[in-house]
Length: 401
Image (cartoon, rainbow, N blue to C red; front, side, top):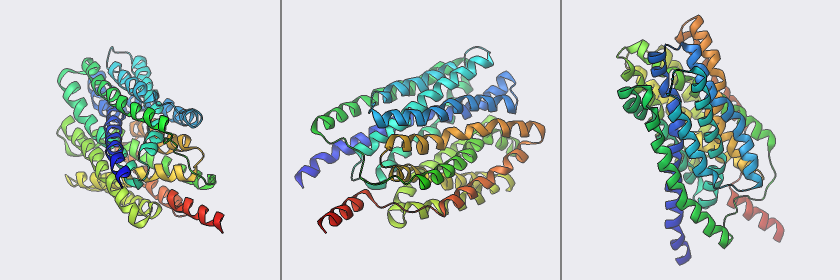
């Protein structure tokens, strides 16, 4: 008992630092969508043009994250945490400088690479320091990212809304803070490595078929979330009026609801299982997305909140499910499930933007209501993996028998 008590503060403080650091990284994913109304207002970009900006942030990120995951499976790279955090911040800081569309694309792509490098290694590190914390350790880590998303529209509005795009260099400040927060975690990892307690893998066969289904569900979730993130502020402004403040408020609700959803997902999963909870959540999300597009007046915000909860309850659950389906490749699983949840949806944004330019924004967003239903259908055939501890106990009993 004494030994366990002395380890708990170290574990909790490390998870807390990683959670806050995750906020400092994911603020830059949220910042891309939050910059969209200002790019439209200051530079006159159309729907297709701003979709290209989102695509630039997402394309390299979605391709690079599995690659970084494969690297971290082979060689632990904890130094990537501060370096990638800084890279994500520098890219967004440069995005508002000058009037060149090409420079903007390169800048947000640079930020996307930083985000891609961060997530696989950070998820592996969380798994290492949160041993014994169940689903809640990953849920708290995911909460940090969700809070970063929620803070992004407020941060961008406070900086860019007051001084224009020329002030985007100030947006590098969260990256500086996040990189500093990584340093105590790196020291803790070095201490654990010296003590021989940093292993995160576990015995078990890879279930690649289930992992592929899970990944497809993650892609569907990513398309609806990124599509809404990109165009919700413009859609809310069209529907409700009130200028950029109306759109910013809608984005804050979308992102802040995710903070509640992530913690709720971890708690519910411990009682009813990850697969069952995710399945029900996607049904809620499908109804809520349709509500966002058809419900009139301020009730739109209620539907946005329900959409956020429905999409975020499975967020951390998908990460640990992926790790349990691919126990021999924790980094790769994390890169796909944690990274693609946000980045790959940007690949569909130009299609949505082009359709919106040709028809209307509401028409272009209607297909998003079908995406959570596809995720639900894919989750219907997924098994619930055994808990790592339970699996080890079963293996031990089998060996004794």
